[in-house]
Image (cartoon, rainbow, N blue to C red; front, side, top):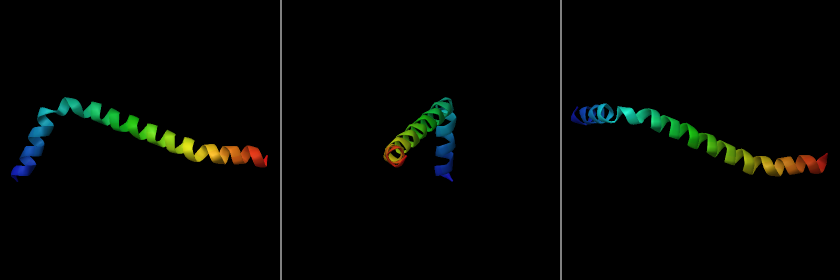
Amino acid sequence: MEHKNCITEFLRKYSFLTPICLIAAVVSLTVAIVLVLRVVGMPSFVLGLYFC
C-alpha cells in the first residue's frame, strides 16, 4: 500500500508535468511513425515508379 501512496504523491506533486509528458509521447510516436513510413515507403515508392 505504501508504494501506491508513493505513486499518488508523485502524481500529485508532478501533475502539471503530465500534459507535457503526454504531448512529448504523442510527438515522439508521430515522429517514429513518420520515420518508419519514410523508411518503408521510400523503397515501395521507388518500386512503384519503377514498375509504372
